[in-house]
Length: 296
Image (cartoon, rainbow, N blue to C red; front, side):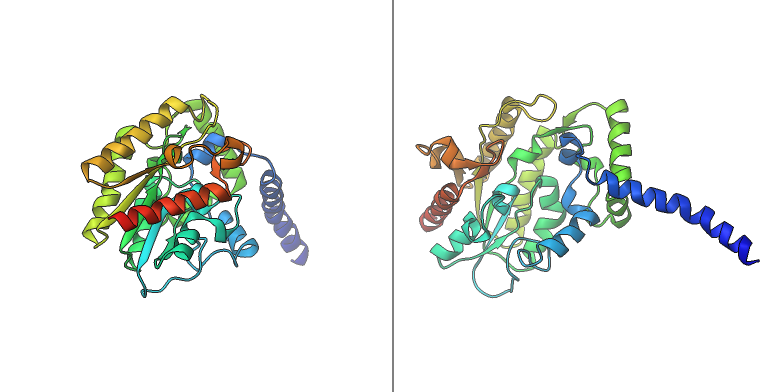
């Protein structure tokens, strides 16, 4: 009886252990940029676990790169991507933190690398509005324009526990990537029309919840064209759509190109592709935000 049980257990455990080893091994293999553009990594449980283990001191209990929030004090909600998050700079140098340090406002940094208008509606807004901010600063144009086989609308929402759990598997990432590369066509992760509608919905939701003062940041990057992921012409269309939405609602606009004018590119941007703001640029944007707040 014991021998039969032992054989049965070995037959059961062998494929499980083999799949586990394969999944761990594949986690060290880079996945295509377009897959990361289409699937929001911050919703995956593998990402959440890594963040909890390796950077828990940097993030609050909601997973944002900030201290814990309360419902006290006047607050600004910063809705954005890795530029708002402050990739490649210390937390205290992000424009959200500098606005707090240079003014009487308390900042809520809801920036998340890779975020688009889809995630702003799905998770950032519900999280922010619970703390009753009076002002918002929004910058979500770049990632929304990226090209992928997987549109964000076909990706998982934060509440999709099973979908995000499955997508956390390295084996699933490669299977899903292979399937789409064979049978799908590349498209912007958020279509231009959907981007405009979602951005407008973000501002409408903010206004309906008492956030009457809103600011739009229109970003920029000197990133060269990568036709299967990014083109400057396509990005410019999303930037112009951002301006259209803001103008229709009389929302003040801060342009990266205007505020960072005169700063050499190598000093204004960081990272391999010069997408992210340097400490100097974060300070300039923070000063611009404070100026607009004082004027309004």
